[in-house]
View (tube, rainbow, N blue to C red):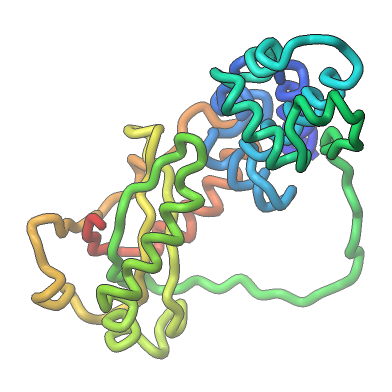
Amino acid sequence: MDWIMGLQRAVDYIEAHLTEQISYEDVAREAYVSPFYFQRVFSILCGYTVGEYIRNRRLTLAGSELLATDQKVIDLALKYGYETPESFTRAFTRFHGITPSAARLTLAPLTSFARLSIQISMKGGERMQYRIANKDSFRIVAKGTRCSEEDEKNREEIPAFWERCHRDGTIQWLCEHREEHGTIGSNIVGLCMEDSRQKENFPSLIGAESLTPQAPCRMQSSSFGTVSSLNSFRPQNMSHWGTMTWNFIQTAIWAIQIITVKSG
């Protein structure tokens, strides 16, 4: 339950600092995990990004104050993190469907985005059979790029990277050279890992299990390299839950003997 409580503490931190500059590092620290994992867990659980939550909550409060007070639009813009009245007006209009001036003049109904409250729904309690099996090491051939966590750009960069790999024939080559009956089957997989050396960006890979020791000549370049140790990607200052999560991921990653990587 610690990670649920940590997530709620992070949400409470956001709510207490909506009129200030909010750092993802400070928010993630409340949940005792790295910004990398916090943003992904938050998006999976909530269905929207941390940035979207912050923006929607700020615009909700700004709309309430606009109707309840006589504060100037420029003052509300600065209070809720917008550098100019124009940028605030554009965001306000997209969210509420009406400009700030028109909303105040007509007292039109505005959109409200409620504060997030983390609740637990318990399911299960049924017996199930399972088996833990040890798998032999295997090889993944992959093409990689680096994605940025700044302003959650990775949510656009990763899909764009997959699209490029479709266009340039990478996916087709992986399909032709993948191991049909390997440890992970014939799947084309995406891998994301945190690089503690470069906290602002991280490697994202697209690959498949393959018996081919090298990529084809048309894909070879000086940007190819072989990663034989992934220990440098281990996150720093992790909680017990974060460490358990990393150990689980690390157990899966250590099975990968060699990854051939090309920078995108």
